[in-house]
Amino acid sequence: MDLLKGKTAIITGAARGIGKAIALRFAEEGANVAFTDLNYDDNMKAVEKEITGKGIKGKGYASDASNFSDTEHVVNEIIKDFGSIDILVNNAGITMDTLLMRMTEDQWDKVISVNLKSVFNYTKATQLNMLKNRKGSIINLSSVVGVGGNAGQANYAASKAGIIGFTKSIAQELGSRNIRCNAVAPGFIITEMTNKLPEDVRKKWEEQIPLKRGGTPEEVASVIVFLASDLSSYVSGQVINICGAMKT
Image (tube, rainbow, N blue to C red):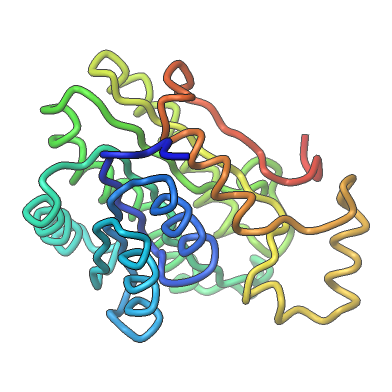
């Protein structure tokens, strides 16, 4: 299928995990892919090679998504290299989990900055190009933790809940220019990070999920392809949980 043929996408935080799965799936669907991560390292080079190996244009960019001026610079470079932007996927994110009584100001500030401010930065930097073209799809990665909260993740939950409010507001602001904005809220997704959890902790998580398993990055990517494509042309301002009914 070529659901994204002829479109250009920016995906943040895409050198590994869910971001990487989105980048590769977009390439399979025919999109040209500009992707970012904090450092232009071997991981990024490998993803770049995989994307271009599918016969489309792909390029990685080192970007501190939490830095406003750096984001503007990177987006301008992408527009020079690719011409325009049709899709933005705000995926960059970190965790610094601890109970509030132990949480430092730095742990709060960093998570809010990387997870929430980055969404503001990239949406702000790309909207002018989308407004000029009178089209676009913005997809923001929230989390079921942003929907329902989680003990020990007050900073992460606040950042992901903020993304939901931002998404709904931007959908209303930009809708008249044919620019859609949606969010996805993944649950327990099997990644390098979750693979590091002890086996008994993983099993406990899976027992709480009605589908009795964790999701895969590829399953998240499939929903994001739908939101990026014309299949969802009348879907905007929505939050789709990808969690096996863990949170409903």
